[in-house]
Length: 193
Image (cartoon, rainbow, N blue to C red; front, side, top):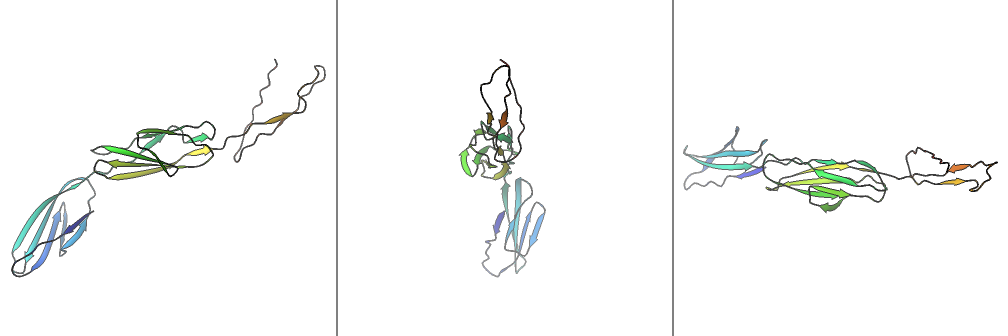
């Protein structure tokens, strides 16, 4: 937003009208006003004042509206297990023109300012990943995404008797695997040898 302030003066008489004109915006009667634009680029502003004697003065000023960056990032895999996870975040932000810098916040902690960063999490969680993209004109855009660190199961089983005779043997294995929440599937692999 641009805050426009009319500072016009007159030696005799008074100013009775103010006209602001820029890119299709025509406004009268306001000495001061705030305007905003829906697109970037140069905007020519015309400011006209009128005295009580019907005399006019005009001033021109060029305003520059900088483009906004569009924050975007990719994640190698947004759902990983708590054990041995590595999340890789790659900034894919864009802007019409200018340069960009990136600020990464991982689980509410500033982490890095690179284009590609990696992070591992030690426990099951759903941390927020935030990318703040900043242009060379200090225009910013922010994108937040969640990653899912799934709880890792703990495999454990017991056997009724570890050593048994060849003729009469029956090994009873009891599954005692656990996971804090969610479901598990089990695969038993038995080797003979």
